[in-house]
Image 1 (cartoon, rainbow, N blue to C red):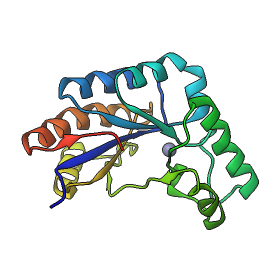
Image 2 (tube, helix red, strand yellow; image 1 turned 90 degrees about the vertical axis):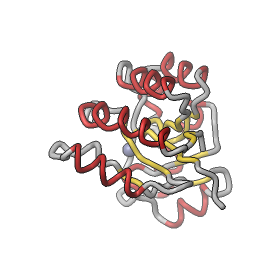
Image 3 (cartoon, rainbow, N blue to C red; image 1 turned 180 degrees about the horizontal axis):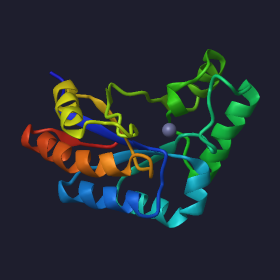
Length: 181
Ligand SMILES: [Zn+2]
């Protein structure tokens, strides 16, 4: 039987106020998350990266400039991934922005990284999201081993702040542990 664990992931940060809010929310329920950060944000908000690591969260690679995988050359793409790796000082987990990655890059990266996609997409980045319906949908889609995507970004802030507290309470009441990947 698969263990009752859910992997919460947060893309596109760090953000100087939203990411600390997420840390505090996760802390309330003893949850750990994996943060796929954009290297240029990580450079700007280095303190937030230290805070994530100090709180037992995982900081992972989401490229230096959040580049599109289908519109970049292999060389440029791999360079952008490498740049982010240097900033965060870790080479373990990678998530391609927009879920876009060409097979050549995938082959190169899988030597160094585990490429992490997801099975539960909150769609918190949608301006028109009907939050109550989204809450029901993500709860229903959650399974042991689920990888759930949120965004600690300005675009998603309003939806994130409505979705996350109720969702982690749901996970807790269902007996799920929330761990890093
Ligand atoms: Zn992203």
